[in-house]
Length: 195
Image 1 (cartoon, one colour):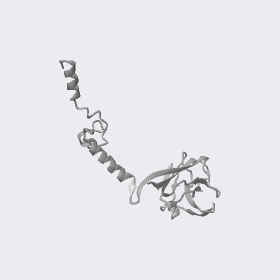
Image 2 (cartoon, rainbow, N blue to C red):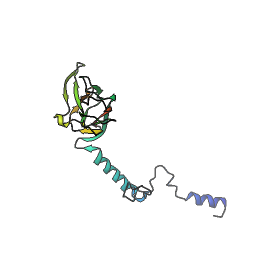
Image 3 (cartoon, rainbow, N blue to C red):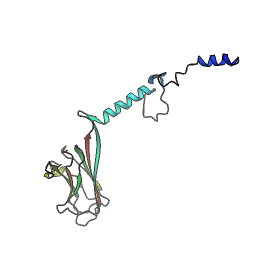
Image 4 (cartoon, helix red, strand yellow):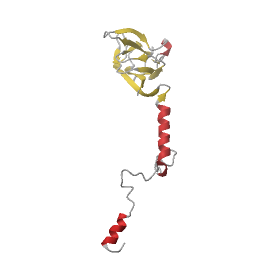
């Protein structure tokens, strides 16, 4: 550009500064290309990619009752696993949830009898006491039972509802007498609805 200072400043004044103005939108999301998406999106523009993301979130974290988070409450028994003598590992619920699954895992495979786990709920009452302990499994066959030669098992609880301050108690129902099964980990997976 050549000319006098006045001519130059007049030319600059006519430039479109809309991209620098925070109150001006110059490109619609449908006009901005998506590049290098790593195969996460099939959409070619930002608007389409956001629509895909919204759809994926709706499909994976919502149900008829709204959005939810999946929570894992974990109990660990270090060392050899023996049959419980009536005492269990107590986990305290901090929110309303629904028990969806119970998984058990050991480092050493059981010899002889399987390692079978049970999970009970004790409901909290206003008088700072816990009432009724009942298994989250409708039948013994639904409990996770790690057989000889295996290292893990998955249980099928009957959608037990957990309230805040309820106790979730993990018990070892059966274990092999030899104690070869060791370092038991029990994961109680719950669904917590969020707003």
